[in-house]
Length: 346
Image 1 (cartoon, one colour):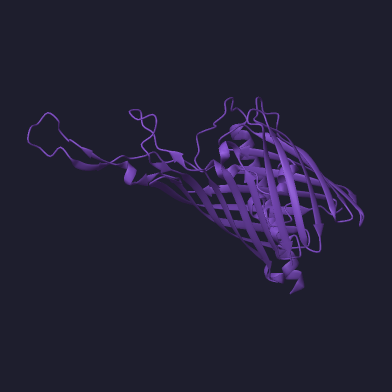
Image 2 (cartoon, one colour):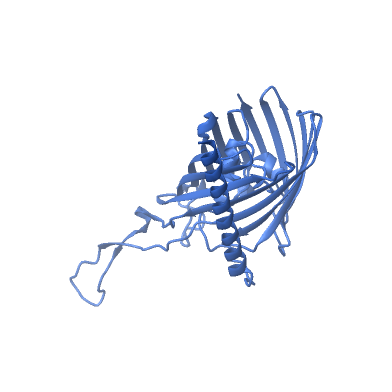
């Protein structure tokens, strides 16, 4: 029986990594000739915002690490790579006064794998409703909000190889209009035989398209204005365009330069290929002293000309299962974005 299980695991690893190699080859080959960005060609951009102060401070190079509750965003296969149950909350004061929030909880079941629930939201403050005829406003206010609810599962098929997936429900709302979609993520993690080197791959936001619908698309129409006496107030509806989700392919490498009880230093790099922008590299490092103090630094969107993103820095402390993290991300034209995180492990 043990021999059969080992044989099955090896076959699964072989097939999955063959699939990964093919996917990478297809993506790199297909888009190697892209000479212009596709920014603005997808909907729900909040699905691309960096989640977690720890990962953000490391420049978003987290696909091959993913060993906390934010793994549901970066690489769901990491859910089974840490032993304690965890609740994680992250708050970001995003640009233009928007609030970006991520909350996740992970529960381990032992040999049956690990399950996670997550909520991601982006909201704007209320704004004055204005028209061309009334530029000073009509005395009415509106807001906009995006939300994604996720259910994730990860399992370690062997002591070195793990697999994970997430299913998400996504909704966008602007005043009386809204759009819904469903999406799926999946990822793998593999620790090489000498332990200090780890590889990770994930694909995020594969799903249906978003199309705005609602009462604001309803209007009264005169079907034939050339005829007298016809109905000039026929109820009609504007047909809005469908937009794809921002799909992201990540391939990451992480190496533990120092690995001891008192000192730990890990460096990581991610190749990132979105369907709405240029390919890029993220790089970062994390130094941990006595499993209490963490110092982090990184750089986002390397090799992208005129990138808005750049240097990232962060710090964290952890004691008795409670951790607090902070990250600072420098923006080219929008100042900086700061993120605060708190987690409880039990």
